[in-house]
Image (cartoon, rainbow, N blue to C red; front, side, top):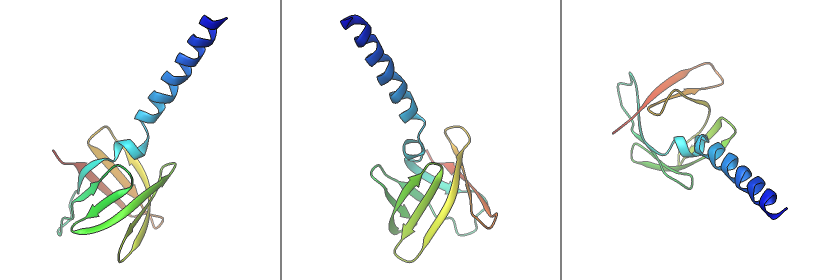
Length: 104
């Protein structure tokens, strides 16, 4: 009985751990550069919800795949999609699409 419960617990922890690896909160960590922007703003996302947009500090939160990005001057809502480890796509409610690349 003990061995069966231990195996079940180990399997549950493995599944939960793998699910956490694919979360947007983990994938977004790092520096991102929007493609095709003339005034390139580098976004740096940190663990715990901190972000720097250019030189402006802010914070971000996720609700599923929706991200709320807040700076001192504005708040933005994006639907976020990841295409591999180095590409992220933001979609606004208006239909505007922004592609970002992870910086080395």
